[in-house]
Image (cartoon, rainbow, N blue to C red):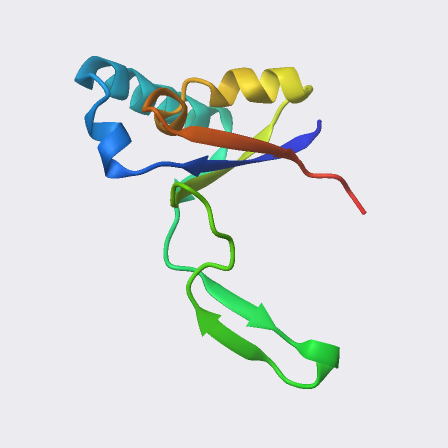
Length: 109
């Protein structure tokens, strides 16, 4: 079954302006996704890792990616196709709270 990476972007302002019953339904949906086997979590503080020409590891705290909203969390979803992955992510807190979820197919290399 194909695997998809879902990246949720959101901030407190979008979450807070979403009605409580919609937020709760989204959290209930996330709980259902976890029961279904989806791996998900809230994003912590990232570290950038570089190793130019294999000559030495360099790290720098903070995100490399710059976006209009901070990354709020990640999910690893098994779904039959992109349409199913989108349907599963569409009820998540970031999707319903005036924010956004990106779905990336994980292609085996």
